[in-house]
Image (cartoon, rainbow, N blue to C red; front, side):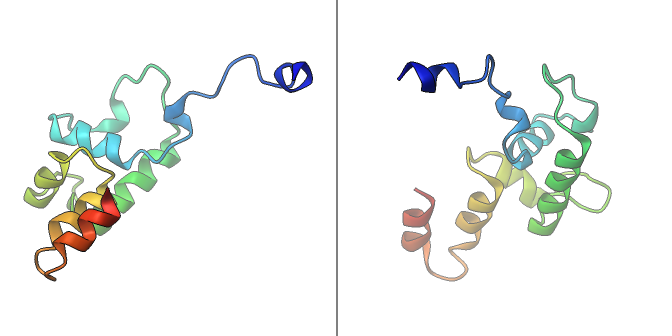
Length: 106
């Protein structure tokens, strides 16, 4: 057990550097932060990760080509979910599969 403990790093990598930032970016946009790239993060994520988040949010219809939050994006930002799950949940009524998507998302 001590060998395993001794092999641990002194500090862990901050979560913001390890996770998908799409939910963070969507929430910041929903709170009125125009450009999350200029937000004062305690530990700033890489610009590449923020750009990937913008790409995903654009593909989901949450932001437009000018990086502005769409009305659909505003709906998504109100849900405390990963944007992909929020999109699935919001679209599920169109396809009459709300119960199934609720199961998947939960």
